[in-house]
Image 1 (cartoon, rainbow, N blue to C red):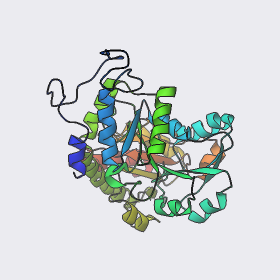
Image 2 (cartoon, rainbow, N blue to C red):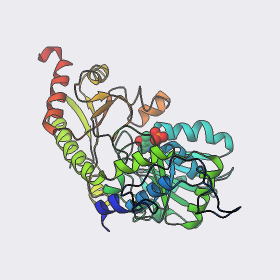
Image 3 (tube, helix red, strand yellow):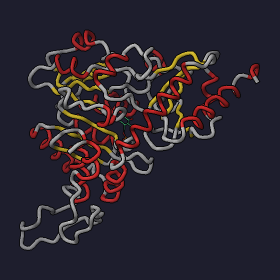
Image 4 (cartoon, protein in one colour):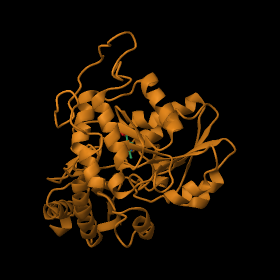
Length: 384
Ligand SMILES: *Cc1c(COP(=O)(O)O)cnc(C)c1O
């Protein structure tokens, strides 16, 4: 099966009891047993639920992985992967990473005795230099959020020795554009809230791996800790993921058009998009990804306050957290998604008060460009 076919068919056969073509929402917490311990493989919905199983199979197939575990959020999925570590273990982490992941690592998990080193993983030498005898995990985000830097997944995997794990948060690229397991990673994590769900109407997460040992441990924690999605959320996510291929093609086409428009605008200082030939890692993007995705970040010329001014002036780009839905969004990372990172640390990573991040939706590209052009003009009184 190829990608778009898997999205619609993997894990989603007709319902065995009724023939329902679409996987039903099994809205049940428990299952009647024929005799004590004799059941059809389902005993309690925190442990296993047929709608969730269908979603897990669908998403595992999209990543070319054998095992999927669905969670109630991307953060719950991330926490489940970190459950593979024990007190005293060390993780090397992409420095430009999702703010919530940074918060989980730096404010919660350090109290459990895990150690984290944040490095610019786009420099493999920096990754190598950070390795310690107790390093157990490499946590990779690529493209990074919100600077859209790339990490060479194969290069990081080349540094891994036995017993170490490479996990990739593939939320930005999606399996349509990047397949970390094929590049050597051990585990892929997604916030399915974003492109996979695709319609900004459901929060969820997933982990995918080919290693039975990791899959079993993650499934154990999924049940033991209990951060599972309910059947309706699993169903909504599965429904969204059916059109992932179609949507990603449009997201990318629009993002490329928006990035090129911004790059050619005299009021724009810098544009960050892996699909621009000016992106310092454009060649790596072409090698590692089959497309450049739908996220574009940029800064305007002039005072940083222009970014705040622009953020609320657009008609189609809603000022909102999150990304990956069919509708376009604009976000001010320093005040919104990355507000939990100390200012000094944030600015060192390039997340200045002048930076805006766009999640380019699948509206008509020309409407989005007109919207940006008008809003930018409105922030330059002298040009009106
Ligand atoms: C949103 C996001 C997360 C967290 O996912 P939630 O579903 O919001 O818990 C993790 N990583 C990345 C890259 C994200 O964009």
